[in-house]
Length: 416
Ligand code: F6P
Image (cartoon, rainbow, N blue to C red; front, side, top):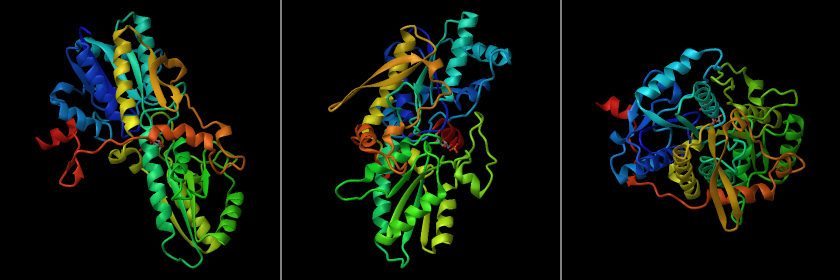
């Protein structure tokens, strides 16, 4: 590389998103980039000329290691949809003028399906105008719903945390006698894809029965059938564990969480904020069956638990960041790095690149054949697919008994 690189983070964060940032930084530096800039709050921040020189923040090898162990987007994130090129050329002119001012040769964006829309539009604009800057996406999302990649960095760590927490919650449920029984409803993120919800089955093993029922958003949720199952289970067990995706819908397409209260928050890409499914169902079960219920929304914890990150995930996230820089350096643009599984046993995975137009705004759901016939559990094939992705640990760097993180540019500015 002869000139400069700029990198941004976009969408919901993960425990591995900063490993991709570390991978971009290291590879760009090793390949001779003069400066590696970081957009603060993605493309939205760049439009306000808000960026940093990453060398001012990553000064030592220890900083790089801390960065990989730091959850949430180090640079700050955004959910900002660029207008269509024909609708507002001014925005593109402004972005490209900033890129020229910073002498950028490669623009790397770490994000999910919505964020890849940004890479798609910017690379299209570069083609139209004959601009030489290259635009490459690095996959990221706990939801694991990006097309064309075997899985996404961030998913493995979230799945490991979810599987582990599930085991702990299941054990807790059996230690008190609540008379009429306990029904616990655990709500998991993932929007319209059930990958993370299905990952609760990873808790199942020699020392744990796993959840009793798992409801993925890929299958329409039938409240009557669900109640029948819970009632039957309560006849034989004192503690029932039900997992629901935040995105389960009734047959008419209404999100279950909307049954409790209409959703008023919608993000820049038109996604409704999904929350309250577990709490709605727990209240419903308590009213109908008179038993004790508990609603647990794993919420932010599942995507920020870097203390329980998967080593495979952190390594792959770092590798994906590096692969994006290599692709740009070799002249590619309008592409996203994908993970390609080579074998399951031993698990081996490599990287490749694919056309971002085939990925942006798409959604990869759990295949029907990986969900049981009844639509309330995942199959062994699902578990075999996910298991390699949660292997290994990354020890946190502990200070005074608590994991140490790298201070973000925002935190540093608040302190000065
Ligand atoms: O896209 C990742 C994700 O974690 C989804 O699973 C979830 O629906 C969404 O982000 C939540 O976003 P926010 O934290 O902005 O409410």
